[in-house]
View (cartoon, rainbow, N blue to C red):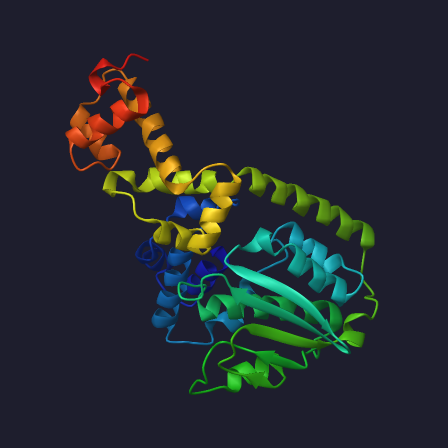
Length: 322
């Protein structure tokens, strides 16, 4: 998202205002390992299109990116010994970039198809965000294959627009609009040609960095990420499974399945988080009032909080002794 904000500012837009309107904060963007809420990033792309009145935004925003945009994946891509190997890395390490879309790489005889499908298409990512990914990959491919490199065909979920010229000029290939998923189809023989500047040692070294990063993401489990969202929202009242599944870029079923794999559930995690926070608040000196604590935990009144706390701990809040 930093690349988008740089592009907006360069085009004379009030990027800070759009960021605020989207619901994102500078603190969230400052954390290089943060997973940004899908609803908010989708809103930012939509607001950006409206501000610039430009539906081709996704095609040119990657001009502002560099090899560091996707950390070690950018270096691994550029150091790959063939473009097929580079695209295999894109598919393999996609979770490093986003968990809002599934990436596939399929061999079809003389062609190779790189595809993207949104996990929750009704909630995002935006068309422009997905087109920016295609643009970035194609621009990176042209850096190592030459500026004339182009896919055999492209499929976009975007419906036919008033002016298709920018899309056709950028991809330089037939485009199928209104497709069920995003695709770029390549000539397999072209992808398998050795790259002059390929560096297998550098690529494998970058792979290890990515693998370590993904392991860290696994440790920062879905339960941990959900807990952080619950803590954020508690003072205003937490929302339901559907809302948080969208924020985490997955379906409700996927959220339930992943929480189950971590031996927890949405309700269990909500209650455990509330209990931990309640005990923390009751341990403070001076101790906040029960009314304040009830509000901070998203309860409608003190009585509801007191009953829940007794159920969690076996004692009333007033009798709790840390």
